[in-house]
Amino acid sequence: MRLVVDLNRCQGYAQCAFLAPDVFAMHGEESLLYNPHADEAQREQVRRAATACPVQAILVEYPQEAPAAVEEGLSGVR
Amino acid sequence: MSGDHALEWLRREGRIVIVGASLAGLRAAETLRKEGFAGSLTLIGDEPHEPYDRPPLSKQVLLGHASADHTELPRRRGLDAQWRLGVAATGLDMAARRVRLADGDEVEYDRLLITTGVRARPWPHPAEAELDGVFVLRTRDDAARLHRRLAASPRRVLVIGAGFTGSEIASACRERGLPVTVAERGAAPLVGALGGVIGQVAAELQRAHGVDLRCGIMVTGLEGDSAGRLRRAHLSDGTTLDTDVAVVSLGATRNTEWLAGSGVGAGPRGIACDAGCRAFDIRGIVTDDIFVAGDVARSPHAIFGYQFLSLEHWGNAVAQAETAAHNMISSSSERRPHLWVPAFWSSQFGVNIKSVGVPSLGEEVIVAQGSLADHRFTGVYGYQGRVIAAVSFDQTKWLEFYQRQIETAAPFPPEYSSVDRRPEGLRPVPADFPDPSLPTHGPSVTVSGYSPTDQRITFTPARA
Ligand SMILES: Cc1cc2nc3c(=O)[nH]c(=O)nc-3n(C[C@H](O)[C@H](O)[C@H](O)COP(=O)(O)OP(=O)(O)OC[C@H]3O[C@@H](n4cnc5c(N)ncnc54)[C@H](O)[C@@H]3O)c2cc1C
Ligand code: SF4
Image 1 (cartoon, rainbow over the protein chains, first blue to last red):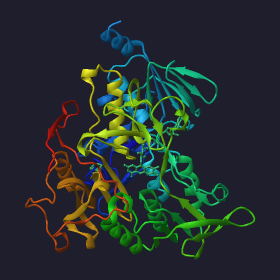
Image 2: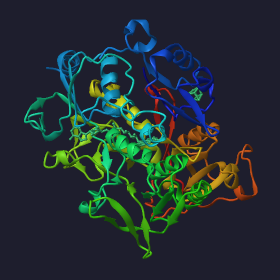
Image 3: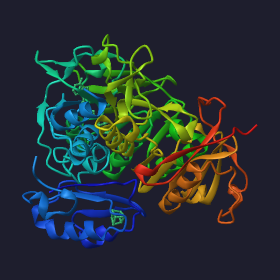
Image 4: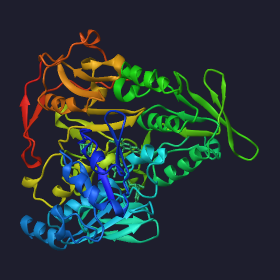
């Protein structure tokens, strides 16, 4: 699935790196590096990370989920 | 047709065309649909790829943590749009409201949004730029090529130009264990963006990570072998450097050539627009059907004396695209100004660098928190007695505070008790920008209200 982090907003709290360590990792004290193309197997971890981010900086598009199923209308529909 | 009816018609069945299918173009398209635009939507992009994110290209991708082919931007919603990818717009007929495409097609619009961004400035000598081993980094194809070459363990990488992109490339190379030389014409890395005081910290960081940093040096020539492979660089101090990879990081050029002769006020510095993202024509009259957003735009900003700012910042592309899209389908009384406070981040040598405001306007800088020696600090820039910008090295938590200070034109140097005065932070010092483009004196302006629909402008008289 596709994801992007608004790193202007990110405060480096590292919740995401704790909840989905295969996708998000801290690099140094405060820099966040992430894989913008996370593996399908990571879906639940990524969802938890995106939900837990205290500044809601993580935007994810979950493939094959109808817009109605996701808050704010995130969807795989083109 | 009255104005209301025209607008209603536009929203229901008008045609909107977006030229430039990247970050700004995508976010604008999403906003148009979110705000109820039900007409036809066409996105034209010369890259064959759907919109992808660029910041990872010089970070995760070069480090091998992500693939250059997989940084596509997530979408916030279905767009129901026609995508014309892999075909450039080559011309614009303002009177007929038509965009010409490279394949001969023409697309008509009722509203046009231009988000054609910038491209990497190439190495100035075309024959040398053609050498195998000479790279630029702007697109995902550039990143894929460069990553492949770095993975093949070159003997040495030469980075030409130590702005943000060049410095991030050098950082990634060092992390991969590659020998790196950085040649920078200025006195320090990042000097154009952050000034000489902070630039010295960037220089220390590079050297501490084993970069062979050479400042005050220009690369005068690139030399290839008989097979056309780069093998040596010539430097302005008369020395040569053996290298098989050179990454040209000399900034960017605005993609406005396709508008030549169209009548839109477009040039090498970008496309001038008003605070509502409407493009100016060459007569200086604002258009009402052509809008601009992202790296290609140049727009006046109330907080910075209404100077025109062009910002090559990710966050600006998103915010300006959203404002442009809103304004494209709103009546004049419902339009919003693009009052986003400039902000960006960079990640290099393990340090998170972030900034708010416009540091290059700063005359002086004070280290308000932390210390330069620790490479962990917040520097605050002042212009005419007010706070104009702040930069943090691994101190993100302070930036929000300074953003408010900038928005309210708080006095500089800061006097609040929270300032953590280390010895070196006692006094403001000249920010030491190489070529300060000083803004004109004028009334200072403050911004208040933080909901995008609730931003008001209040004039305060100019300080004598
Ligand atoms: C390597 C790299 C690292 C970066 N890192 C950061 C960072 O850490 N922080 C930060 O804030 N910003 C960063 N940026 C900047 C950020 O990526 C840009 O601000 C952002 O991409 C701007 O988006 P845009 O849509 O305005 O323009 P662009 O992304 O440049 O998109 C413009 C699109 O229009 C296309 N186009 C051009 N001419 C035509 C034409 N005639 N017809 C059709 N299509 C056309 C282009 O090919 C391109 O696809 C980085 C940029 C790069 C390259
Ligand atoms: S949880 Fe949010 S704020 Fe924290 S590091 Fe991750 S993205 Fe940044």
